[in-house]
Image (tube, rainbow, N blue to C red; front, side, top):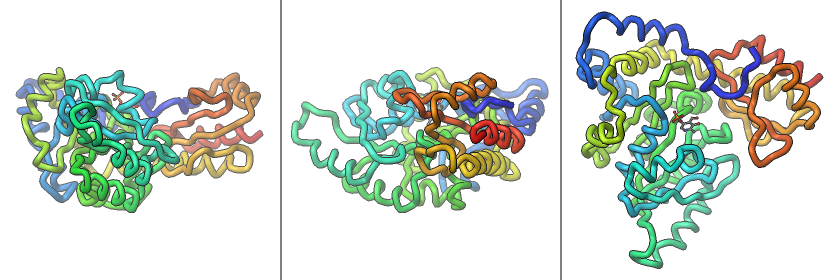
Length: 339
Ligand SMILES: Cc1ncc(COP(=O)(O)O)c(C=O)c1O
């Protein structure tokens, strides 16, 4: 196994595949009225130790876009990191779904919004009245696009700013499980207790097949969410196959086991190459960004290794470790990198 390009390229975990198979017993109600979908709210409420509403979806882009529509009016502004998936990788879908909301980049080291820069950005807004977008929400990615994790203290600082300016707080949790196990905190602590109003929860990268969810923690944003889902083309008729995956994902802490494994592979790789490669960001989850001599990058490619050369750089590559990356594959990559 030489594929370190993306956890999206990893296979489906067999337990989740079996859950799809189990849900494939004859006929069942459509559009979310099946026995699996009907369990979701209660299951997630147990897990997060609070009221919440869960919308199973097939893509993270859909979750982020519906979240944006719920948080921001067509004339709203959503603050996010310049590398944020919602800003650079979703073809404008969040703005489109919300009817026009704008995404405003707020820089920060290690792929995370810097609280002081956010404060400064907000201080400089609001002076042009109706001529400018209305500050409406902040969206953070956990883990970030740099593979780093916002600490609870960092989240708290951002939440304080959100409260001061009456902004909603959204978490793009495409790799939420990886962030959770890296911090060793509970799902509740990592989300609503830290002030997160809505979260896009990813499962696809961590073992599922096209299974994501939008979770609403703050009832204020629970308005007509089912219509938003339908209008966006994401009310899936055979929803049972997504819901069955989400239930299996959580059962017996499978999601945490898979994420722990992926994170461990990344940590082992980072440690194994640390003398020979410059790591661009702290390795907190399952992604490693490293700078290598170009000849080494080419050599790895010639040996069949798959990874992303990072856009805008000559000598930086991104390696993604997944639930399905074997320790042997990680060790072989270490050997190939340092030799
Ligand atoms: C940070 C982040 N958010 C969201 C997504 C969801 O994307 P998709 O719409 O492809 O499921 C991804 C996928 O790569 C991601 O990396």
